[in-house]
Length: 203
Image (cartoon, rainbow, N blue to C red; front, side, top):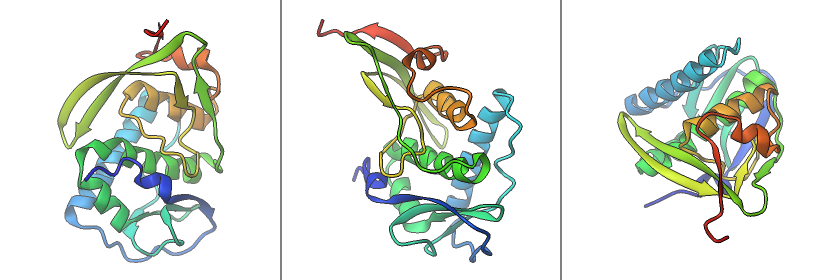
């Protein structure tokens, strides 16, 4: 069963002040997944020369979160990820983009001090953005071209399913968290390597 819109029905909550972490309920596979995504995001941050260590705070997989929250940041203490949400997303490899977004969103709260907000990037009339989507679910790598007139400009939207498997778009999202780019400016978006502006085939 595809769960492409699962996170749109679950709140991605803002930061909560210090609170001790509950026991970690993660299975061995879930622990491996948490480590994989933290290392993936950290590697991108290192390449971008950001002075941030996203492995500093523990990530706890638990059901002890606010109601309907898929993830929660306890600033200066830890991050919580809902066990049942993670388990559901792991059931289908096409949800890889949603899992990355879930971790990036909570990292945005805990490490970049970001609250919830919405930003949208829209291509000029007659054009579309073209990216290359990379599926990499536990080492199974596939690439698929993708084009769209609209992209969310941030991972910090509360209920919008901002999931992408484009490495270029993910790099843009991390830069947006750091305040290096404007998540509404299509010119900054297409300045990212691997994001192109192409003519709409309908015109």
